[in-house]
Length: 103
Image 1 (tube, rainbow, N blue to C red):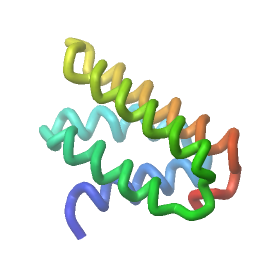
Image 2 (cartoon, rainbow, N blue to C red):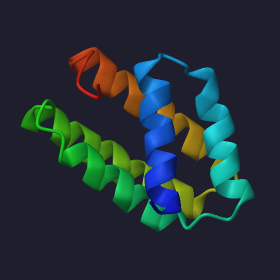
Image 3 (cartoon, one colour):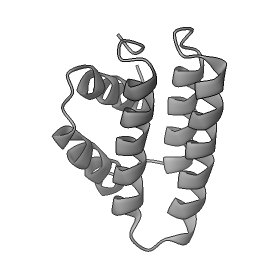
């Protein structure tokens, strides 16, 4: 298992247990350990899009959220806030549309 899968699994566990407070720690650690954020975004998006429980309409919203966040991340000097905001918005987008879709 590579680092990106480990991060994805940690995020999904936090989402499933409704532990939003862990998101700040995860986003901080991604930047602290100099994880390639482009690969992180690609890997996370790939895992989410493979989930058959998420409807296509919601997948389009998720893709839009990813693209906006990736853009904001590259132009911002406050990358921690952008990444944390992205992960929290992703959580609410997934949970609001289908509460059990990541289980």
